[in-house]
Length: 107
Image (tube, rainbow, N blue to C red; front, side, top):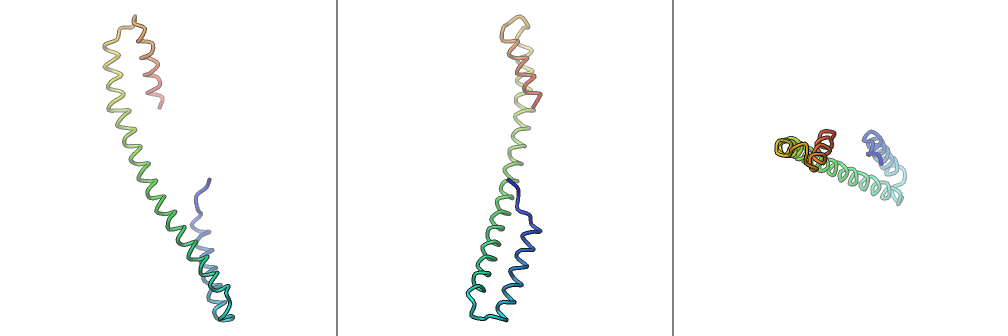
């Protein structure tokens, strides 16, 4: 899935506006004038919704990245270091701990 190309959107809106003006000069009673205007308005509305959703998504990504960093650095790393000091190498849980440390630092 790709994003909406703003340049293409602007060009199409411009073309529709020009067509509206041309049709209104030449064919005042043509139903295609209304159809052209409806398409333009619908495209502008959809593009506005797209821009709003991108802003929401950007905010969501920022919030996720902040929480990810907090959990990884301030919580998980600290807890793993604490466990590493408490669990001796002879215990079976030590192997699981070292795997967990590798996993945590590979993210």
